[in-house]
Each structure stands twice: as C-alpha cells, then as structure tokens.
Image 1: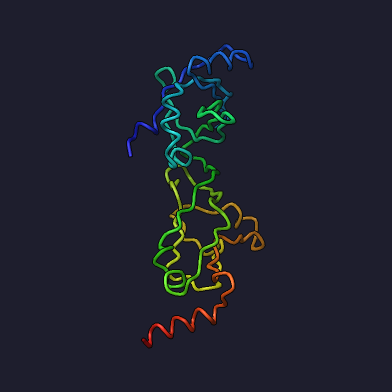
Image 2: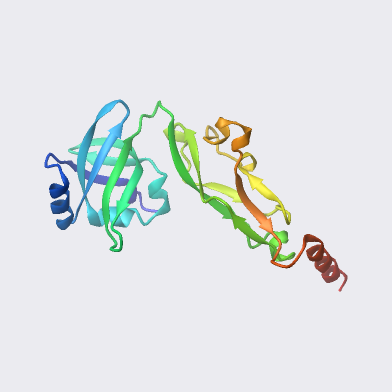
Length: 211
C-alpha cells in the first residue's frame, strides 16, 4: 500500500462560513478542521482528489496520518468524515491531533479470518453472524493497529465470541471492557442453518465420516 495515502498536503484557511465552504467544494477542495492535543483548532483545506483516493483504503481511518501544513508536519487521526448524500464527494473532515506520548481512543475494524475454513461452517453447515464490525480501542499512537483479527477456525456451532475473547496487540485495550464485565459485547456467533439443530449437523458430519 502506498504511503502516499497517509500523507496529505493541507492549507490553513481564513475564509470561514458555509458560503466559503461551498465555494471551496466547487473548486475541488475539502474543508476540514484540526483540533486536539491542547492546541487551538485550525481550519484547513485539502485537495479533494487526493482525499477521495486516500479514503478508499480502509487503513485511512485507523492510521496515524501526516498532514503537511505550510511546511510543518502534523500527525493526526480522522475522527469524522462527511460525504455528499449521493455524489462521490467528501464534504468535510475532522482531524484529531496526535501526541506520541498520549493515549488515543479510536475505532478500528475487525477482520474475520478462517470463516470459510472453520469446520463448524465448512463441514457442519453453520454460518457466522457478525454482531459488530469495529471496536473502540485505547493505546499510544505507536501501538495503533490498522485492524484486529477475529479467528473463527475453532469456533463451534452455537458458540459466541465476545470482546474478552479477542487477541489484542501489545499495548492495546478495549474501551468497552474497561467499563466492566457487563460491557463484554458479543462479536460473532456461529449459528446453525435455519431449520437445522446442532445435533442434526453433528449427525450429518458423523454420517459423512462413516461413508
């Protein structure tokens, strides 16, 4: 993946307001704001074509980006992105400054692996029901993962994986679990096919092994 998507040129803008933002969008620019880390917010503009190219990558939303602002490099995360209702246009971005010494809280996607290979699915006819697609994490910027893997290889029929079952990278904690055991959300469940019980599936598997 090209590092170019993690480096964006930005300009400070002083012409503020809805009218100014509309003019910028007509000029193929994206209005944005940079805030956080104890510093004053700064209004920015970015090239829309570059943003549109970068935002197509999943990692763009969970990676520490470098904003080149008037020759100064600032590390930041995308905290919010607004899009046009039906056109392929980004209309506004909120960036959060990153301090290497301060923990950040952000959402990262879950990648479900071995779904097609899991015996409970491939052999026993189960299917995976995903309850959530991403999780809120807290960590230092240097430990920020682009995604977290959820391995379904050994998940049995009827079994549910929860947040506490996830294998987290070093230095990463889950925001919900920090709130207490009652926040241990379900992540994915391997369910039997509609109209089939787990016992039926096991019987089918035994029958196949005897053939």
